[in-house]
Amino acid sequence: MSVASRFARNIFMLAACCLVAACDRGDNAAGERPPPPVVVEEIQQQDFPLIAELPGRILAIRVAEVRPQVGGILQKRLFEEGSLVNQGDQLYQIEDAQYKAAAASARAEVAQREAVLTKARLREKRLARLINTKAVSQEDYDLAAAELREAEAGVAAAQAALRSASIDLGYTQIVAPISGRIGKSLITEGALVEAEQENELAVIQQIDQVYVDITQSTTELLRLKNELASGRVRRAPGAMALTVILDDGSVYGERGELKFSEISVDQGTSSVTLRGVVPNPDHLLLPGMFVRVKVDQGVRENSVLAPQRGVTFDYSGNATALVVGADNVVQSRELQLGQAYRDQWLVLSGLEPGDRIIVEGLQKIRNGMPVKPTSAASKEEKPAEA
View 1 (cartoon, rainbow, N blue to C red):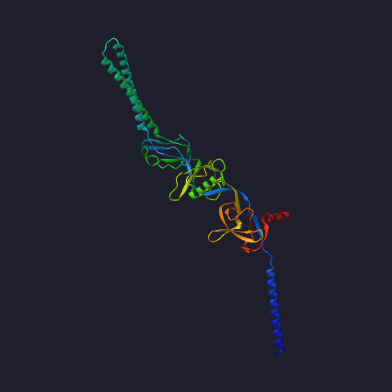
View 2: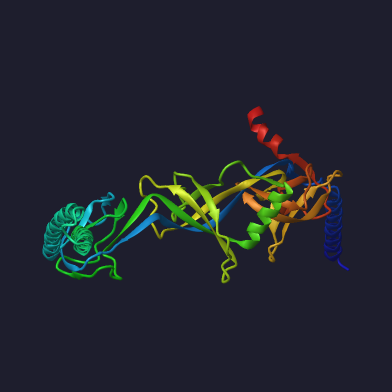
């Protein structure tokens, strides 16, 4: 072997020895690596407001469909479409010539019947004086008395006919049955209308306050009732408050109250309808509008809450959390969650007060690994101390 070959072999062996030594030093360093730092929050008990967010629909608190009560040609429309009308305001005018004529005829009939009554009354009074002296027969007096009663009945019938004709004449002026906002006119001047026809002339809706009909599943309703009965949930006195969320995600400025729940269950959806009343002074909520409604159902006392950033979900939707035990070793917990509130979950099972849940550093750890925990509260205080 030449000198050059021996020199190259020695260089190669020296490099191999250095590489092995470096690997040994790396393995030793890895074995001595300190526990990774994590940030934890301590689980505490606190009162948890139960707020259900449910779908709802806005309805007018009063609705009146305007229809004619007598027939005739529609002469005038006396309102502006979309305006506010008051109860008793005239909306339409029906041609009234024939109704005025009928009322005049009825008045004449009353006058004629009253004249007949006056004549019958005078004859009965005269025969009543004569019968005491036996100047007339009892039969003549009885006939006069009967004619008097007949005349009185005739006057009463004529007066009733006059009242009916006057009512019909008044119905030619179609007025608003309630106060509210009137929609578009569904008929034009010159059209023929009929008494109590099927098609309405216009619709008035009262929306200073509105109903909001909310749909809730029977499962959720029964769970709430059971928790109220057991005392786990405390309901504030008075009606449950409602918060309306509009389509654009904004919160409506006025809060409402839940008034009642339907006593029957929809067989198709297995749900019940809750009805609330919401003030609507600016008429922002319109009938038919779909909204989301938050219902304050009560307060669950001494609840266990977990920060949402410390809870993860697997592909099946199961919730888990990593907690630090007394020996600073990571433990995995399966959780059963309730509602979300702000940045926290209501934990029904899986965590206890005093548990330290990991909220930062989750990517670097696994179950059973020792860690170096730092309180989230102390971490937040450090910048202030600096």
